[in-house]
Image 1 (tube, protein in one colour):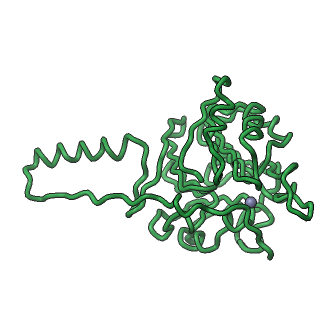
Image 2 (tube, rainbow, N blue to C red; image 1 turned 135 degrees about the horizontal axis):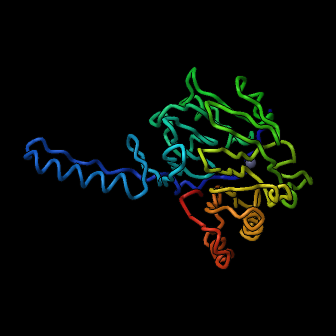
Image 3 (cartoon, rainbow, N blue to C red; image 1 turned 60 degrees about the horizontal axis):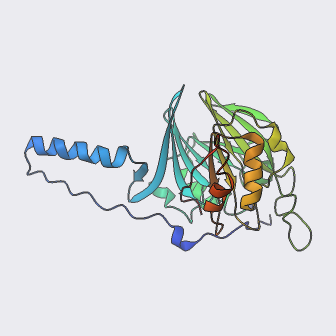
Length: 276
Ligand SMILES: [Zn+2]
C-alpha cells in the first residue's frame, strides 16, 4: 500500500518533560498532607495529564455520563478518558512514547496517511481487548478493525460513533488528485453521554458540514497545504457552530488567525492547545 504523508511534525513540538516531584519520608504526617494537597492542586486542576515522564495539556468536561478528559498529544492525536475507558484518536509515535501511555480500549483511525495510521504506535497501546474503528482505506494494515464508511454508525462498549465525510475540494497534489479524496477518509462524531465530539480528520470545509448538529466540541485541521486555511476553518465552524472549537493538526499555521476570524462569533469558543 502506498502511504503518502499529509504533513510533517515539528520536532520542537515534542512533549515537555515532567520534572520529578521529590517526596521526603522524613516529614511529619501533617506536612505530607499539606504537600499532597498542593500536589493535587498543581496536577489535577490546571489542565495537564502526566503519565510516566510525559506531560500533555488536558481539558476536562462534565457530561451526563461522567467526566470526559481530553489530552492533547499533538498533531492529529488525542487521548480521551471517559467512563473508565481509554480512547486514542490517530496515535502517532513521533509525538509521544506510547509504550508508557495507558493501553487502549478503543482506537479510532481517520485515514491511512502515516501520521494517522502508525502501526508502531498502535502496537504499543493495543491489547487483545482493544476495539478499533477505522476507515476502509486502513483495512489492509488493520485486519481486525470495524470498518465504517461515511454515514455509517456503530456502537462500541456503549459509545455511539458516527463516520462523516472528510476530504479535499481545493487543495490537490501536482497531479490533480486531492490530498484526501472523497469517500476515503472519515471524520468521527463520538457521543459521550449528552455531549458530542466531532473529530474532523483531514478535511476541508465541505458542504456536508452543514448537516452536523449539536456539536459540543469540534476539532478542525489547519495543516497546509493538506487541509484548511484559517479562513476555510472559520467558514467550516460557522456552518455547524460548535460550542468549543479546537484547531488541531495545524502544523505551521498560526491558530491565532482562527481566533481572530471568529472573534465576532460569540457562540463559538476557540481553544488553542499544542496540536502542531
Ligand atoms: Zn492526511
